[in-house]
Length: 556
Image 1: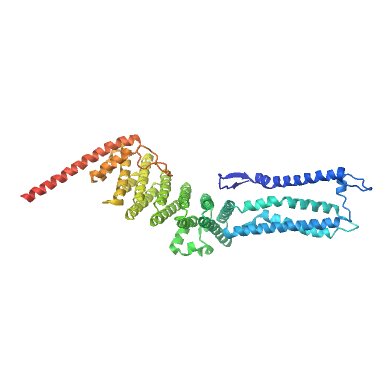
Image 2 (image 1 turned 90 degrees about the vertical axis):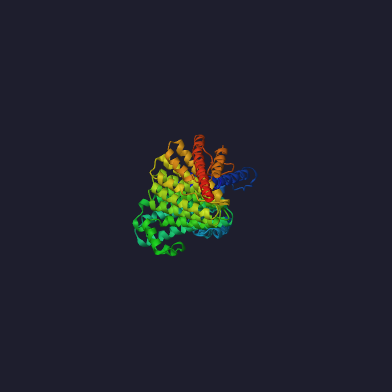
């Protein structure tokens, strides 16, 4: 059996239980015991053969002398041995209580988690039993009887109790590391979910639903506390744990009984569910998505909290939401896929309301990757509907004077249309229609700059079509742009001509410059703009002729 050991500075490593036991317990205990035994043996033999004073009656060797428990002095040693065990127990309880209390103030459920762990219960029970046996042993030694076997057993028990103290402290600190707490909460929640999906009884199933819900909220609390404390590593680990919980649940979802997807009374009282309309609750049950909805609802709360304090967490939430959507694609769960896009839309809405352009840009990157996964998985209808959502947010960005967001959406939709063309999907036509509707007229300022950015994306797609021999679709884009002012067209052409590097001059996650055109497309761009310029000149000539006719009529 193997378990995952998380580290804040290294990738997750699979470590077997046996290897962990040897490294953290057997090796330290053996090393400490061997060191103590060796040191005692050296000095005891030195005394026995060199420096120790021997009485006239002495006849035995060192071993016999050591185990000759004389009744005239062994009573004091027995009482001290029992007292030492009690002192060690007191030290262990004191240190553990302080450390657990400090962790419990920061993370919910740590105390319960600590006392559920068998190792903690075993160690504490070991010291308690050792203390009790020490008391009983001290009362069993008499002048007529010395229980030598019991004394040796008690010595061994005391020795073990002392040498495991250091490894146990290390274990406690390791147990209470935030990343290990997160892993344990996620593992327990996953186990509860798997058990609940196959449980028959109504009451046990409802209890398991509540336990799964509590696990999600514990991870959310850890994330919120970490955001407040500016601890990005722990917050990121908790966000990823929610994703791991959701993905593992989605993969096992086909094994669940139908009753598991009924929202029980215990979780209907949860704040996230109690505020929902009855129809919405019924929809969650019918679509079998209440668990995933709860996970992403936690994400939305974290997203709002991190928006102004730790934006990297917002980007991570978008990444993890995409992973959940891809898991839905893998099992052909259309309802969950739709739910995932709804939450992506909600992230965008929150970012736009806050006018946080950079976060919206990062979320859109993950949104586009999710739609690309839809297209590759054959979910063209879902992809088309999602692109319609993107068009809506492009319109919203125009109205909110956030031109860069509108431009980003235009380039993302351009990439999606190209992918649909490469895959030969029938949805390409619908995607192209949405793409051509992204432009909005503007006169000056941000609106004009946004329009120019959208038109650049149009040119980029048109050059792609020309490079793959689909001139008819390029002509449709040309016709859509033919009424643009010649000055704007010249500016767009010149700016695209000047872009030589595929890489942007800042560190970005997308890894490419929006305005870069491959050489074969750039060569086609000149052909595309020659058509536009001819039509623009013709349109200008027609306008001039009309103006001349009007002037002549007026003179007459």
